[in-house]
Structures are given as C-alpha cells and as structure tokens.
Image (cartoon, rainbow, N blue to C red; front, side):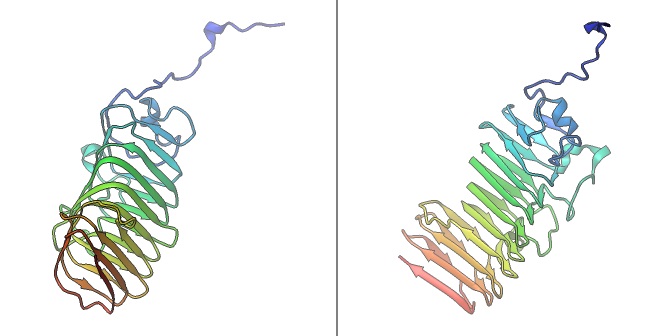
Length: 275
C-alpha cells in the first residue's frame, strides 16, 4: 500500500469566512463562479446564494442579478453605484444605460438592511425583488436621462417589487419615480418621492397599501393607463400629494388625518376617499 504525504496536498485557495473589505468593483450576478470577488472577500462563502455583509458600510458596483439570492446586510448600510467600478470597468454589466440594481428572471431579497443608496434605478425585469430596510432607501435618478422609465419599476407579468421600509426618490419633478409596466406590480411602504408615478399595460402601483400611519409625500403627477391601477393612501398630517392625476386606468387615492392634495384630476377612472 502507498501513502500520501499531507504536506504535498494542495488544498486550493483559502478565503476568509467573514467580509474583509468594504468596496467591490464588480457587481453581483448571483452566479457563484462569476462573483469571485465576493468569494475571495468572505461575503459569498458557499454556493447557497447568500451574500453575507458584515461591514458597517458596503459599496458595490451596479449589479444585474439573474439568479435567486439573498443579500443579508446584518443591520448595515449598502451603496450601489457605477462609480465603484473604476475607470477600467465602466460600462460592464449595465442594462438600460446606467442602472444601479437590476434583477432579471430571479428572486432577490435584500434583508436586514439599514440605509441603502442606489444611483440611477432599481429594476425588476420579470423578477421578484424584496427589500427590507429599517432606515431609508434612497434612489437618485436625476443624474440620468431615464426617459419614460421610472426610477423604481417592475416590468413583466412575473415582476414584483416589495419595498418594506421608507424610500426617498429624487428624480426631479419632470421624471418618473415609481412605475409598473406590462403586468408588473410595485409596492412601496412609505417615504418622500419627487417624480411621477405611472402604471401602464396592466401594471399596478401601491403606495402605503396597508393604509398604515406612514408619511407619504409625493411631488409629481400620478397616471394609470388603460387596464392599469395606482393605489395610494395618505394617512398622516405630514403626508401630501402635490401633483395632478391622469389616465384612463384606475387611480384610487385616500386622504385621512389632515393629509393634503394640491392638484386636479381628469382621469377617467378615479376614486377619491376623504376621511
């Protein structure tokens, strides 16, 4: 019988088991082999789709995630931007121009987050995206010419976005902040939104759908096109809509507890509740 000298066996690369750096110049794809920067830095320690972030603040490049994954922030902050790619990587992995976070044909959960900052847009393309944040999710889209697309949008019959925390969307008054396209569904809990809201081609947008006592402040127009729906509940004294209502779909607005609407409606399907 022969024997093996254990000192001659190469065990392969040994990576850390806890996150050891805070800035990543490649985006997350969801693929274990492709996301080697996250493997080498102790974030993706096994092929189970769980990215475990333990630094107080993590910066990652804009990402297009095409597989089922969970990003566990462990109560920490996350920044997503093309800027973290550096000059050598600009343009890599970008969808629809400069996109902060895109999920495609997948189910993605960002869990236990505190504050999240995303440059440009968040897109669910026939994907389900859930974001659980205890702080504020900020999306800055005013630097990008996004045309008729919204800063946060679901697109496709299997697309759903659920944001279970406060949002702050800065898209300027003439840009779209929240959208649902082609049977997509977008749910936003509460927050401050600068920019319009649109549902089209059977899409649905829900803001404060549970009618909780959450601040909802919207500066921008609301539009539901044919076979589409927008539902918004304003339920605190500091909640407001400063904008007009349009479209031949259904717009359902509810105002309570001294919330304010400044604007008008010429929408064909318009339901207004004043409590």
